Length: 181
Image: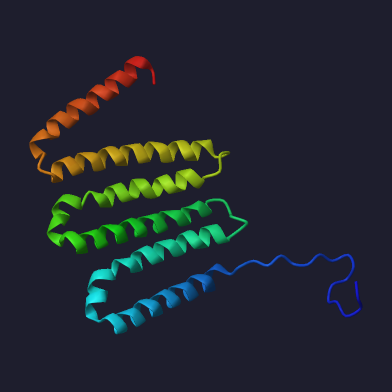
């Protein structure tokens, strides 16, 4: 070591940790500034069609915060839930801008499906050692996927078919009880 070094011989250099609060704030301001600049250059039409990308950008920030942090505390994978949900909402809203908002009458079950997909992101990144937490997540994901599928069928005009859905769900439960699964 040279005599001008601030570290003594037995000291290790401190590992640099990113402050997530300022990072999120900075990223949000940069994204907001870019969107507002684009709106000035391309006019109101840009903002009226592309505002859903603000949701997508906010969701990507949650993902960036998760993946930037090296030492993740227990439960930090929860950052992926709002990130995934915002990305799915952004995609849904952008799609509705393209095809017409009157189609929301068919696509509203996406809100329930988005919760299942968001829980799926947490499931994927939950450490393998936390088996009971992963099992609970998987059960919730399955239930939400079934609910959203039923809601899509109802939204698509299959309201008269909902008793059939109950029969199918009942048969699945009976089958699982008989097979012990």
